[in-house]
Image (cartoon, rainbow, N blue to C red):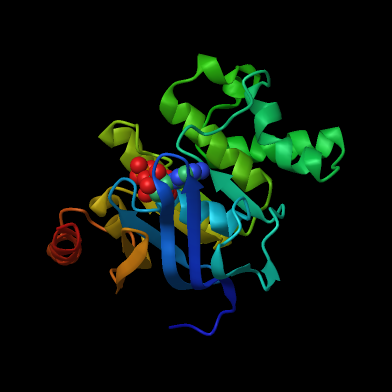
Length: 253
Ligand SMILES: Nc1ncnc2c1ncn2[C@@H]1O[C@H](COP(=O)(O)OP(=O)(O)OP(=O)(O)O)[C@@H](O)[C@H]1O
Ligand SMILES: [Mg+2]
């Protein structure tokens, strides 16, 4: 597809949870996936099909039971190069917005004035006014919190972004705006992104490539070659959406 290097590779990866109530639960099975540097991959699937587990494997937060998960040519160990954005945003509630955003440079040992300058820049890149810098997360709307979470990942300079339904709980206009902002940031820096979503439309709008999961397995894969910016009402967009919907509905039976 392209000659860029592979940053994420799942090779026959599987994850089994042994539970007292349900016995062995295979959340991910026989999973093979290659993500090249700068590629934006959306992972689509019904609730419980293993999407979060897949991201946690990539983040090094879970160890595969079978097979291998390799990120940036080394076994994943939660390296700082990986930014994980969850549905809740996972902001630290006792820290003001700017200090949440500056967390990555702080962990990396940057001096205060440097990390504050980087956080201020990230704040404006995700479309937030500087005046929210001193707010606490609970004082913000859900959409603003998601922007802060995005800004924190941006500020940390991670080259790999693992995003778990980050916009799922937002109203449609806010979701659309944040999708656009994510793409603006990605156009500039070309991070390698694994983006989990339930939304077929979101996947077609964002992705270079869509991976469909069912019961822990990859059941389909699409390249999305539509030019950007994508017009959600255009015939080409709707045609791709229908194609994905057809496969999604078939695999959901
Ligand atoms: N820590 C765990 N212990 C036991 N079972 C787990 C654990 N984590 C996930 N599972 C099980 O693995 C399966 C996949 O879960 P996962 O959270 O990956 O699904 P998901 O696709 O992210 O779902 P959703 O769309 O609802 O977030 C489910 O059956 C879930 O109950
Ligand atoms: Mg999940």
